Image 1 (cartoon, rainbow, N blue to C red):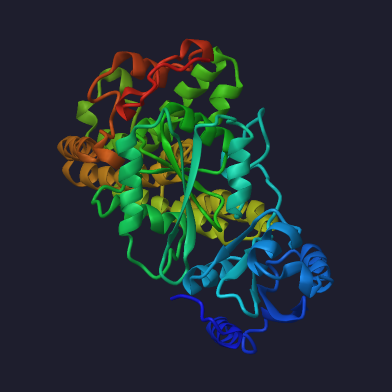
Image 2 (image 1 turned 180 degrees about the vertical axis):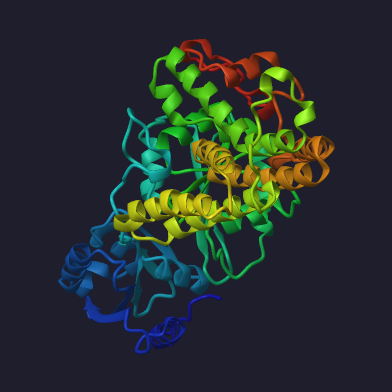
Length: 483
């Protein structure tokens, strides 16, 4: 809808649309510019107060002769002392920019409005993410303001081919979503596919920000395994962009989405690359072992404890001397549910009380449960090992998916014995094999299809100068990295 030719109709329409006089934070300031009536619209809390005062002071001193004729051009080019300034004759664009935080100037006799981008969002300072701490390396992290996040990435990648394209998603929320990629490196088909997916989203708002966006882009899947990686570290995003990945930055959230990814992206951590390659390789192996233990230790012990005839003579010590009144499978289920309750409670507990909660849950409850005969010490031990492995997994989404399959393996192994455990593992492999990342990329790559060089980079933390080839699965334009 175009602006009206009459000044009064324009300000009345815009005032009604944004609720001037009803909403306390929508402001209309009437001024005189060169004997012409004018109004400035802005959202209180978004506009920079000092800059708005300066602009208004300058405009109110303008004489009639200074802006006539060609009022619009002279105001923008000569009288408004601000860098980000443009014109628009579309009410829809004007409303969007106003609600996004810009200031709108409407002048009598003009059928176009002037958009002055004086917005300044409330923001906290960049801090190290709690879930991705490192012993060395940068301590900055993404925040809830999108322009800060793009700046943190550009600080690390000063490539003129780095592109940040912005789109609005949500008919009502009009949430800013930025697509980040390196133009002469990233596969064009992936970029086009992402843009098409965003254009097809039909919703009022992205209620849960990046998580809602992920579900719209990736669609429905029976697989519980994550198909997009989230991080709050700018250095991790920079590294993935230089490999040929695409990142999606959603306003109001500090988590940035990386697409496409494979299973092994969820097993890596920035800490590996801030240590010596040998130390980094060792830490990576320990992490792989922890992830494996989180999945298999308690189900395997349960099967062996219930089928001691499968054990060789040297391993006969495995298994409890006394089972107690409650079957082992039920004991494990009680402990698993208790572990989840403890984890959930810690999320909702103030930081000052989390230590007390851990002592109550981990020490007192488990000790009393053993004393009264509900559970035996061995089940507590193996559940604790599984829990440590779960918390050692870098991606919380991936660890929770493995946690579901651990429950499945416990139930199938406890009810059907070795065959049940085998069936559960086969089902896990089938789901992993069938899972596809964005763009139809195989989730198990480089294991399936097999790529020896790429797999060696996953298993070993190699020195940076030796890692020259970008992941072939992304089909980058520039396949060789010059480091």
